[in-house]
Length: 143
Image 1 (cartoon, rainbow, N blue to C red):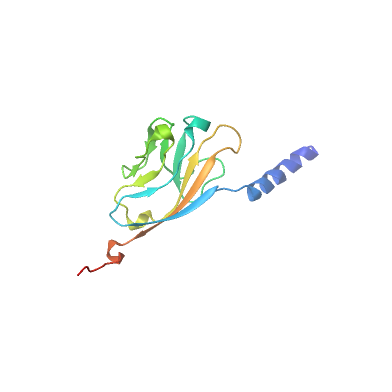
Image 2: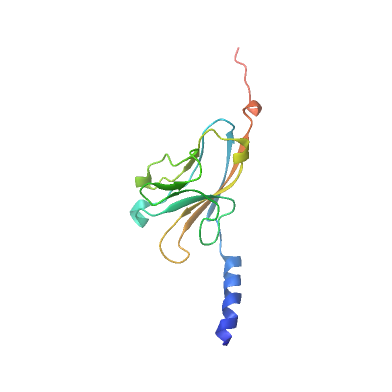
C-alpha cells in the first residue's frame, strides 16, 4: 500500500470534523394540535429545480438518513406520513415542511437538505422543533 493509501482515511476524518453540517439553524415552537411549519427554501433561479429531502435528527454528511419526505424538485416523491406536507410553492423553491396537527412526539431536530449537484454543494437547514401542550398557552382575560 502506498503512502497515499494511508493518508486518505486520515484526510477524510479531518474533513468530516471541520465541515459544517448545518449551514443554518433555527428554533421553532408550536402547539399540539396546530399545524407547524419548519422553514426551508432555495433560489430556483440560481440552482434550478433540484431534489430536496427532510429528515429527523441531525443532518447527515452526504444524504438524508431518517428521511420523512422528499421531492424531485417538481413534486413530492416520498413521505412517511400524510401529516408531512410541502405546502409552499415548489416552483419558487419553498420547501418548508408543514406538520399537520402536531403532536408532542414531533418535538426534536429536523433537517432540510437541498441536493445541489457536485461535491459538498448541498444546502442544509437544521430546525429544532418544540411542541407544547395547548393547555400551556398564555391565557388573557379581556374586560
